[in-house]
Each structure stands twice: as structure tokens, then as C-alpha cells.
Figure 1 (cartoon, helix red, strand yellow):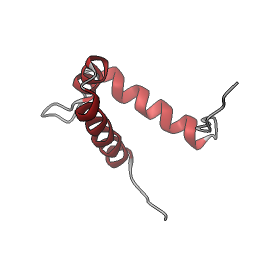
Figure 2 (tube, rainbow, N blue to C red):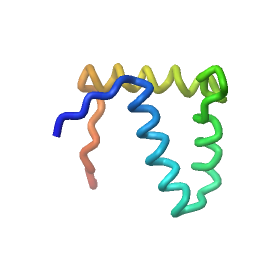
Figure 3 (cartoon, rainbow, N blue to C red):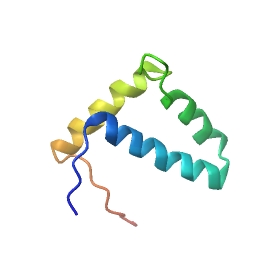
Figure 4 (cartoon, rainbow, N blue to C red):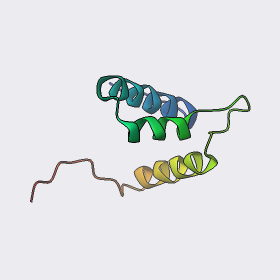
Length: 73
């Protein structure tokens, strides 16, 4: 499956996933993160640093710097 999403669409997908995890766990930490990640009417995140960090992560992925493989040592 090949899915092409722009930065905003990928962010929304990540947000939706984290909402589902929050609904199962009711984690206060995750709830706080979701609050920071929420977008305001001007489409800027409640904590502007969240969007900047998200864009940095996208660049790390594009450069192949992120390894999601589980490594049990």
C-alpha cells in the first residue's frame, strides 16, 4: 500500500491515532500532549513548538535517521 500524505494530513493521522490510544488508556500525559497538539482556529498548534518539532521529525525520517525497529537488549 502506498499512501501519500502531506505534512498536515500526516499530522492529523498521528493525532487521530493518539486520540484512540488516549481513549483506551486515559493517560494524563497523553491527554496533555494532545492538548498541546490541538490546532487553534488559525490552524497553528496550541503549543507552536509542537508543529516545529513535527517538521523536524519529518526531515529525520526523510534522511533515514529514524529506526522504528524494536530492539530488545
